[in-house]
Image (cartoon, one colour):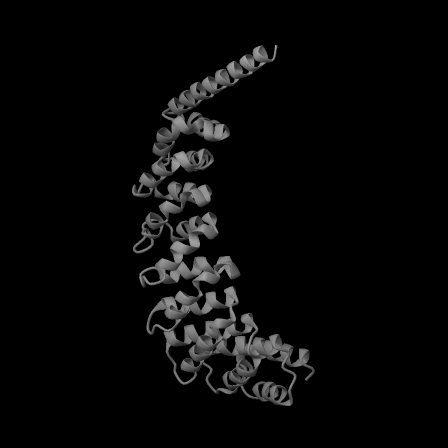
Length: 314
C-alpha cells in the first residue's frame, strides 16, 4: 500500500512539473503578443511560477525592453523570482541600452544572487545614459552583499561620490569601508572626499574622528567650494559619531567664532552648533560663545543657536 501511495505521489509531482513547464512555455509565447495587456498578464503569471518559470528566462529577458513600462517591470520582477537561473540573462540585458533600466530593477531584486553583476552595474555610472538614481536604487536593493564591490569602486574618481551616496544608506553595516573612505577623505580636489566625509558620520566609527577634525581644520581659513563642502560634512559627522568631545567641542567653538558668513560656512556653523548640543557642552565657555554668536550676525543659524543655548541652560 505504501509503495502504491509513493508511486502515486511521485506521478502527481511529475505531472505537476510537466504542467508548470507547459504553462511557462505558453506564457513565454504570449510575451510576444501585440496586445500589451496580454504581455503584462503573461509576465505576471510567469512571476507567480517563480523558479518554475526558469524555461522562460530568455523570453523574459527580451521583454525587459518592452515599450510599455508596466510590462518590462513585470518581466524584471518575474526574472527576480526565478532566481539564480535568471542572472546570466539579466547580465546581458545590462549591456543593452534599451533594457538597462528594467535590468537594474531585476538585479536589485535578485539580491545576493546578483553580486556577480555588480561590476556591470557600477560601470553604468560614468556618463550614465540611464537615470543614476536607478543605479543607486539597484545597489541599495542588493543590500550588504554589495558592500565589498562598492569599496573597490571608491578608488575610481569617476564614480566614488555616487558610491558614497549608496554606502551611507548602510550605516554602521558599512564599517568595512572605513579604511578606504579615510583614504578618499584625504584626497584634495575630488568630489568623492565630500561624500566620504558624510558617510563616515553615518557609519559612526570613532577611528574616523582624527581625519574628520583635520578636514574641518583645512576648511577654516579658506573660501573654497570643494574644501568647504568636505569640511562642512566633516563637522556634521563629528557630531554624529559622538566621540572625543575634548577635541570636537573646542573646534566647534572656533567654527562658531569665525566671522565668515559665506553660504558654505553657514553649514559649518549649523553643524558646529548642533555638535555642542550633542555633547551636552554646558560649560561657561560654550554658553558665552553662543551668546557672542547671537549678538553678532548669526544669519540663518540664529534659530538653531537660540535653541541650543536654551537646551544647554543658557
